Amino acid sequence: MVFIDRRESEDWMPPQRSDCSCPEHDDELTGLALPVTERGMEPLTVRDLVEASALGVTPAQSRDRWLEIYDETDSGPDLIGPFHWGLRLGDEARLCYDDDAARSLDQALLDRPGVERVEWMEREEFLVGAPGLCASGLLAAMARALADPRVRAAAGR
Ligand SMILES: [Zn+2]
Image 1: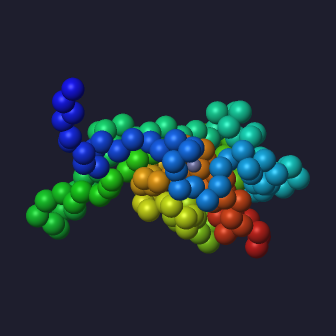
Image 2 (image 1 turned 90 degrees about the vertical axis):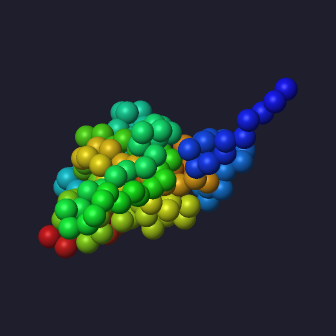
C-alpha cells in the first residue's frame, strides 16, 4: 500500500482526548460557576450552556482554516491562521459577559493555555487556533474565559 504524504497544516486532525495537550476538560469543571450579569439570577454552569446548545465546538472547516484580512493601505490581503476550531456561543451565554467589559471575551479565551489565536467572527462565532486542544479541552477553556470576572463590567456598576 502506498501512502501519499501531504502533511501540512491543512491536514491537521482534531486531537482525541487520549493524545491532546489540554490542561483540563469540560467534565472536570462541573462545579465551575459562570456568574451572570443579570441581577438576582443564579450563576450558570458549563453543563447548562452545553445542554442549551449555547456552547459548542466543531473542527473548523477547511475554508475557515486561514482568513484573509483586507487592509486598504496595504498591497494585498494578510493571511491569518491557522485556525483549528469553530466555537459557537449562543444567546444564553450572553448573560455571562459584557461588551464593554475590562477584558473582552476573545482576549480572556486567548489567556488560556494552549489557545494560540482567537478571531471573533460574529456575535456567536469564534475561530480558534489551538492545535493541541481537543474539543472537550476547548470547551473547558471557554468556560474558564466566561468565569473570568474581567469579562463582566457589571461588577463596578
Ligand atoms: Zn483534551
